[in-house]
Structure formats: C-alpha cells, structure tokens
Amino acid sequence: MLLSVVMPVYNERTTLFEIIRRVLAAPVPLEREVILVDDFSRDGTRELYAELPARFPGATIRVFMHEVNRGKGAALRTGFAQARGDLVIVQDSDLEYDPGDYPKLLKPLLDGRADVVYGSRFVGGDEHRVLYFWHYVGNRFLTTLSNMFTNLNLTDMETCYKVFRREVLAGMVLRSDRFGIEPELTAKVAKGGWRVYEVGISYSGRSYEEGKKITWKDGVRAIYCIIRFWWAD
Image (cartoon, rainbow, N blue to C red):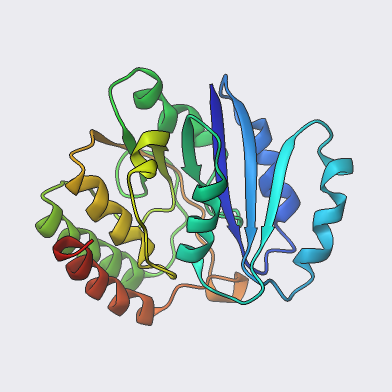
C-alpha cells in the first residue's frame, strides 16, 4: 500500500529538509511518496530541490512548481492530481504538524473503519504550543459553522491533517485556491457520505514572526466558502 504525502511549499527554506526527514521517518508500515508543490517561493526554497536526491537517497520525492503564487488550495489541487497512493495525507511544510502522529491518523483507515480522518488540535491529551486566543476562537467558530451546514461533529475543520482514501478525492472537483480549501473539502466529504473519523494530534504552532501565513481575511473567506460549497458544487 502506498501513502502519498502532499505538501504545499511556500517560502519554507529553513524547515524544508527537516519536515521531509520527519515524513520519511514516520513509523508507519507503508511505502510513501512525497509530493512537493512549490507555490512560487521567493526565499531561496527553490534552490534546495536539487539537493533532495543526495540528502534523501532512495526516497520518492516529486516536485511541482507554480510559476505564480496561487495559494494553498491550488497547491493541494496540483498535488492531489499527481498523487498515486492508496491513501493521501496533507502535510504542511513548516514544523507545526508532527508526522509522528501518522500512526494514529492512519489507523482508522488501515482498520477499514474510515474513509477520511481529520487530526484535531482540540481533542486528546497531546501537547500543544500556547499561542493566539483569537485564532482559537476563530477556528472554533468556523468549525461550528461548518458543522451546522455539513451535520458533522468535527472539532477542528481547519486542521492541516486530513487523510483520504484515494477514491474519496477521485470523486471531487475542487475549486478553492487559498485556505477556503479546508471548508470545501469538508463540505464535499459530507455530501459524499464518507465515513469520517477524528483523532487528537500534537501541535506546535508558529507565530507570525516565525512565518505563520493565515490571517483574519482568510477567516472571512472561509465563512463564504462554508456557505458556497454546501449549496453548490
């Protein structure tokens, strides 16, 4: 069984090699391919890709480039289209999300109980870095609003960690370019009637000084996307 790790990359020169190392070291009994989608990085990240074969010999790492900055949703759409795995997981290219959580994210899928698994930052006893109160409030508000439309009882709709059986993504036409991809994916998973599980994960959030990119404007856009993608394809 093959696991495709789809990783959007935008200006992550300082974390790129380390996150790839952690992905390849994740303790799961699956072959894996890493799909990097560079969304027009301008900090020197693109110069690092030539070093990947020497740094990670034998690993399957494929790189795709956007020639303009299009957003996380566009990067995921590119990556999903290239994924060859039986299972597909979304992995941010910073170090906020720990690939050491892969075993529990994959377990409901490997056991045959789930079609989709979300990793929640708000359930379980795993460690979390303490950061922004209003980000927490915003995330909970957006998740609740999404749940009202989808009739799911998620605790963290905006999480990066989403894992899909290949056939779930194969039946979707995704349209979002930016962070609206999170409510869009959730709406389409709910409409498809797929079996969804949620597991607690650790979280080491970044501050804006450390490179965090999402802003309040993305939250406003997410509200629009929650409504739009419930009523329309």
